Length: 344
Image 1 (cartoon, rainbow, N blue to C red):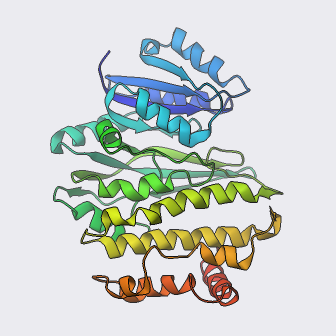
Image 2: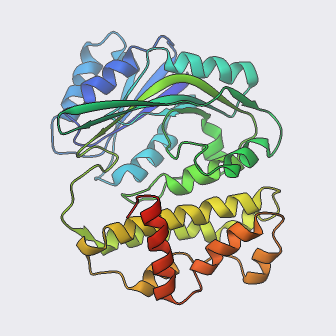
């Protein structure tokens, strides 16, 4: 069956939350939706609950379950959803979050109105820790981008302008397929390489102030809010390898007028990753050396290339320096930055 929209839901050991997610998805006022549930081979009753909806809910016929051959993690699950989806547009929904009843209708209306490649909704962050609940809205100003490079330039002009997640936007599925865009198979920051590059592949984009997504932050959630006593260094190295691929593919955007801004955002994200490593350094084994941490900040450009950028030379030169200074000095400087930002 042909659908206008696929809501992709990766499921792995979320039996406590999956009813909230499925109820919100199935309550959508927009009717032409495929609910694609990706079974990532969990060990609890999550999929039994999904099958219950499939059999008994009035929209159960639109629920399609696809099972992975083995547990592959969130990145691989989202890739399988991209490949299996039947909808013209794709919307990712994590299996421990929820969406507003009119979420898809609002996003789809704008997608049709502007023939948009992507439509972003705003979201509410719901923190549930230690018996307390805190709600914070993260809302975009209403914006429409229709000219080439206009959206990308805006995104890279301000570090925190755009949510760094794959959920809460409606996107033409062909954007993923034609450009071979896929998520990295890592457990931490698996969205980074995808979300940081997506703006370079799209032109027509709409951003809405309407809260369409409810992002739950809990201990043990999909977003890795966990109390950890130990971190395997290999886990972090895999993430760093995926992030490094973004730097090494910089040639693809070097000719763009916003390249200096893209580079700054990429390197700033690496700096935030360094802060995360420094924060968890004592519980990471085997430990990172100063040189290994310093090398995370290695720029994909030479010094001459940085000095030849069209703009933001001083900003990019400062980040370049962190990757070439003696490691002890570089770590000291990044530690100061992390303390100021309350990241370390």
